[in-house]
Image 1 (cartoon, one colour):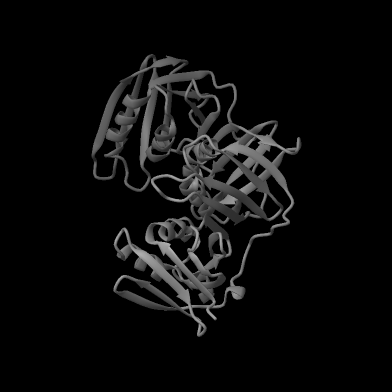
Image 2 (tube, one colour; image 1 turned 90 degrees about the vertical axis):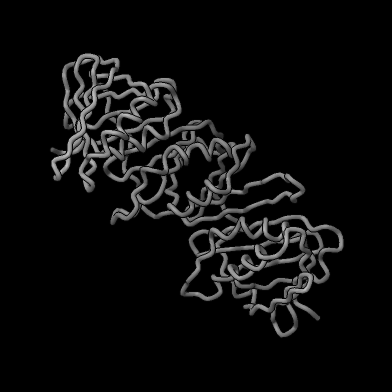
Length: 384
């Protein structure tokens, strides 16, 4: 009696595999986490990948007769993926885990044998009875939140709570907030929740990247379940191009820490306001930054009347200067910024204009698209 036997089209298996591979580490202290867990029933194929921080479970319906023997096992993830990719597009795969716990994969004249590990030893994060706050939001809105804020997450910081994205639900508004201590990004979307209390969760960097990859740009509803330690998202991806529909259950551990009070960081009452043409400002900034100090990336901005002067130099005595027409209200002001910090903000603004609201040369700057109040960015100037 076999442990598992399945006949399946290469495209179907590869499609399900692709959805979970992001959670599989190439090298892990637990050998079994280099594997994926395969579960086959009469009606469904389910594949699980995990690194104990992020868990992805992808399921798809099987055609009649595809399941020859229901069962479960774990097989090496990368090897199975590479084998599938190497086979012809129209290939039919015969996948069987035998009594001696070897995975035999046949297709045409090809035959591969892989080692397996017991499915019952595969560690899972999923808690089917999880309690928590439910948040309903569209896939495209959640994807948009992450895309507009993820650049400002800290990469490596002893303040581990800065290496993730804060999700906050309050009064039918879902916010994503990130900061690395030098800049802050905030974006809001409409959502509904089963609680009126403010709820917060810090989602780790890797989990944010996986969600961005999995979420579609379609206006499909999804539910986020925010628990004390875990965050769960179920993502339904409808069928297309002869591929079966796939349901992905995403689970991540949350960062255990207190995110700083971001509201205190957002400057208010800046009396100097500059309005700049988005594309022209971006191109000017990119040009001038070419001759900035390679390490500090500093660019000097002088706001004066309706002219912004951008200047950069470096230890090799190179210098770039460019004047830029703008609308400006306020006294003359000189500031310096890390050029990449400004470019990161400009790159996620979609409108025709960029508005910078300032007070003093050593105070943070509020940057927005005047027509997109749901997106807010704060950048600290460099100390000269």
